[in-house]
Image 1 (cartoon, helix red, strand yellow):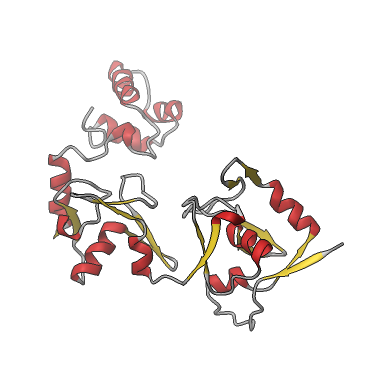
Image 2 (image 1 turned 90 degrees about the vertical axis):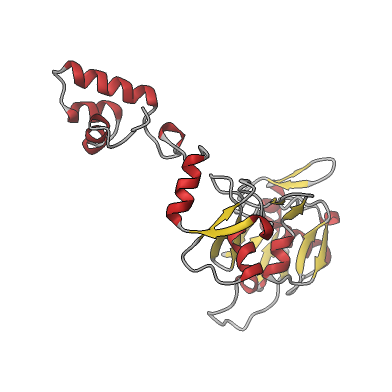
Length: 254
């Protein structure tokens, strides 16, 4: 069976960077190539990776036990080993592996990479990368994930200490340092509550109950003849949750 060799041979240093791990020598067989292309959906424009996608939107695959980014693998097949250079997209679609859409660029600093995810409007500078459930941008430096607006403030003004970075504009995606200010966690929570931005009840992603369930639980218990542990089993929660609902320590808004 035919084979090709991709990537750069490494010294075997256990402290090699993630980039080095992704570009180290990889033996590619015809079976690997067949498996790779079976994961690609060739549209009229982009060739989209349909298998594993990591948080930053790039496809990955395992070749001979090595983790490889799909677009780097495609570039290497078409044009040779990219070495330490970055493989960039002309189409701005990170899951695209069309070699005609790929080109080489220099390694970016964290700050350069950060601003590449920002669209500056006349008012807010909005984060276009990954967002968390609350709508705030997330930026990765090595293995560390930092909120994008905190990184922007830190980059512009320096140390944050234990303070929260808040928005004058009330736009969680905004990273314009002129729209950001420091405040305590208590003050920040009070501001969120006053502006109605506190997530409650069934809006919480991990919630097992709805507001209607809470009303029904209180009505059933008020009628008597039912134990808290029975209600807990019926609604799939622990007895402590039922107790807090009945004493209004929990779900106070209902």
